[in-house]
Length: 190
Image 1 (tube, one colour):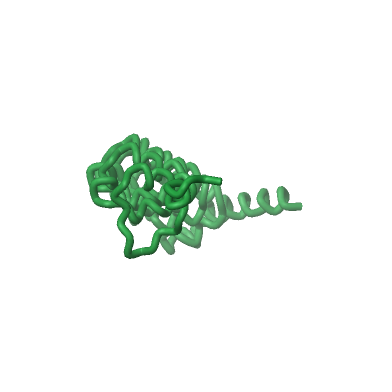
Image 2: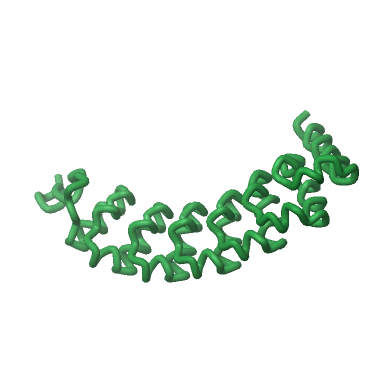
């Protein structure tokens, strides 16, 4: 049986509570990463505390201070847990190729949180579409109008066709490539 202070560390935190004690917060984070949202401003700026929280739940990054949301190592750790954490990263890291590539490993849809410049980048968008065809909806208009890119992307998934410029839906070569992918997909499913 634990002593009184151990027992206190496991008590649920109400939304009106702010946790100022580092040890209490670290213990609560260890059992429930969402406890980080109750951290005091000082603890939200504590790199070790933030790393502990984001290593369990990438979404905890949203409660970190702006300085730590701009810390590459902290953001990468958060993204490894949840690519969606990219949305809470500083804009400088949303424009960082390596950070964005890490985020889209789990799902291409996370490219929506990347900078406009990277959503216009062929390599980034092809990687995103390769993991999640629907990521094409987040591509720049420039890429949606780029025939060569669209042809390559529909070769990854016929679903891409729903998110490209209208004129490509009647482009014979692109439609045939989409159909080829669809047929391959159907064969694998049987």
